[in-house]
Amino acid sequence: MTEKSYHENEYAARFADVEENLKRIREGIARAAEKSGRRPEDITLLAATKTVPVEVINHAIHLGVRQIGENRVQELCEKFDRLDLEQCGCQFIGHLQTNKVRQLIGKVSMIQSVDSMKLAQEISRQCVQRGTSMDVLVEVNIGREENKSGVDPDGLRGLLEGISALPSLKVRGLMAIPPADASEAETMEFFSKMQQYFVDIGAQKIDNVGMDYLSMGMSADYEQAILAGANMVRVGSALFGARVYK
Ligand SMILES: *Cc1c(COP(=O)(O)O)cnc(C)c1O
Image (cartoon, rainbow, N blue to C red):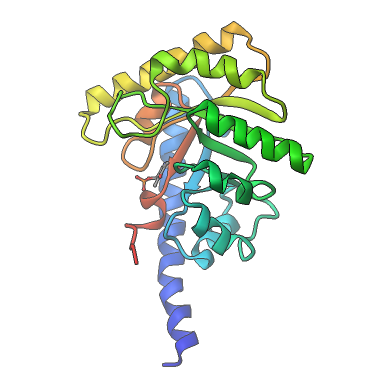
């Protein structure tokens, strides 16, 4: 077998899996949306694409995925030129260091992981320099875990007020990843708390702060997240299969 046909076969199997997985995920999203009084199209599915080859990501886009999210700046930059993004948005969902912000400007439509004033200031500064703007979500450390990304819930309001004054940056909502070791019931409580912040802040009408997206729920719990109020779910392994780290 030639190298090329080997890869074609390898991807053919993955393509079929992705198609089947996507169908099942869409059904799950529709079910949860309807149970929570919304329409399936009110929920954005973002495909979390870390470690996934470009060929497989492009196949998911071909099947109708309209938002993808990468976690690492370097991986995003390596893949970027080969991604078929004509009909698909690309977002950043991982932990972001200020010295890497510059590389994201012009590539991503939204950064979901803003959790400090320092990071927000750097995104704003880079956008002003480049004459562009950036949508962001503020990531909340909803489980108050040590050494975890996200602003502490007690600092959320202050951070939003600070960001509100920055040029070229617009807050579009909130993002959270509940503790990995939480029970299903605990996870549901974390999701519900996030939904409460989302509603309360939305009612407060802070300049430049809109609550359009509540991004929570991953492969294991996206239906529960939607039931609790999420309107964006970030799904990786349930769509693409278990991640293979090289
Ligand atoms: C990897 C990742 C996901 C998707 O995780 P799965 O459990 O594979 O669905 C979602 N959000 C973020 C921020 C991620 O890093």
